[in-house]
Every structure is written in structure tokens, then in C-alpha cells.
Amino acid sequence: MTSAGAQRILTAVQDILVERGLEEVTIRNVAAAAGLSIGAVQHHHKTKDDLIMAAMNEVSRNFIERVGSAVHPEASARQNLGAVCRILGGVDDESRTASVIWLSYASKATTSSAVASAHQASWRLMEEGLTTLLRQWNPDLAPDDAAMLMALLDGLAIARVTETDRMTSERAQRLIDQYLDGLEPQLQERVDSTTR
Image 1 (cartoon, rainbow, N blue to C red):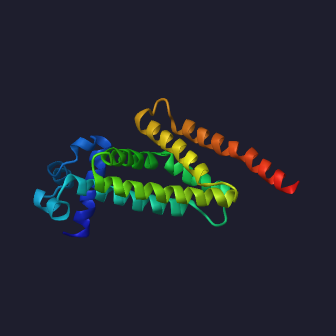
Image 2: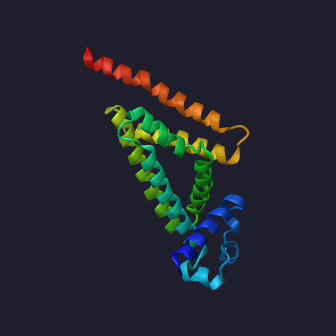
């Protein structure tokens, strides 16, 4: 299969997940959406789990690229952290689409050990990345601080997917900013206590 055909399959899976839901991701539906034969899809992905894993791998790859382009060496640690939080919190439309796929993936992780394993590995990697960003801002921040931030961002991403009237892009951004701003007094207290 050509790389163009493989990409059409991944795009079809993502479109179906976003527009119709996880239950509609079938070999037949993906083949129809991609404009390919069922055999062509099965050549690359034998099962629904394979299709979902491939789509999530693509979302993860795109996410890593987006995070890489959002983090700039000349920006402050707070600016870089805010840019990554915006992506993880599903604030903009592109991030929201990735959140829909991620939510489907998390749901599938409850019934598929292969998806669960990949999901857990991704979440560990994200927590490590957030810990690194937080520590660039303040070396005293710890993995638990990153876990707390991830919990907030997960909740915002879910709300951005399921309750767009209540959780607008602007509100999600404001809540992220308030949370990060709330860390600043803690940072100053830690600095003050070390200079006494």
C-alpha cells in the first residue's frame, strides 16, 4: 500500500472518531471513508484495535510535533509551560480534535490491554515532560505538581470535547492561566524561605 493510502486510512479513522464515535470505527466504515477496499485496509490493520492504535500513534506524533514547535528556547519557562498546557487542555480547535481522539483511546484502554499499555506509556511520558517544564520554571516543583496540572488539563480537555457551551476556549485558557498564576506565590514563598 502506498504511503498516501496508509495516510488516508489514518485520516479516515480520525474523522470517524471525531464525527461519529468509537463504535463506528470498523474496517468497513474506514474503507468507505478512505475510498479503499476492505482488503486494502486489512492489509495494514487487521482489527479495530489496530486501527485505533495507528490513529493514536499518529495523534501522538502530531502532538509531539506541536509541542516541539510551541516550546521556544528564547521564551520564558512560564511561556513554554503555558503553550504546552494550551495544547494538552484542548483549548484551540486543533487541540480539541486531538482530545476527542485521545478520549476515545482512553475509553478503549479499559477493555484492551494493548491500548492500555500504550496509553499508560504515553501518560507517563507526558507527566515527565510536564515535570521537566515545571522544574525549568522552578527546580523545587515535583512530579506531584505535574500530576496535579495533568489532572486539571485532562478535565479541561474532556469538558472542551463534551461541553463546549460551558467550557469555551476562552474559559479554558483563563482557568489554565489562573492555575499557573496560583503557583507563582508558592514559587516566591520558596525563594523567600531560601534567602532568609
